Image (cartoon, rainbow, N blue to C red; front, top):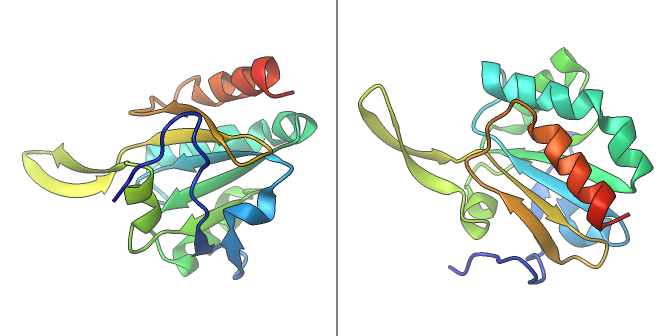
Length: 157
């Protein structure tokens, strides 16, 4: 499977969102889109990252940028996560990790000596025409949302 590269059209996708609707990337044409992949709802790092995006959402909106979170969690878990942290953006249920594989973030991970496949925390910025403009892989949560905001301010607004 081909993975997406900077400057290329981001592949369109169709996936179920936390609002119960099927969402396509092409639905967001005309808006900058921040697609962030995270390993699991309700875990400390993922909750911090989601809340950082939440707390900056007005900044993103003012730059005509939409935030979308993606993890392999099922819709019902996404809905609980959204409710618990009052997340003002959609979470996409990539349960078969097709999206993660397309973006090259479904990786072999090691934790406490165990190996397993999972999401490598990553963020992608797609411009209004649907082109992939920026990517961050192996994201460290602290300060990351500000990095993404700064990139959009300086390059896409």
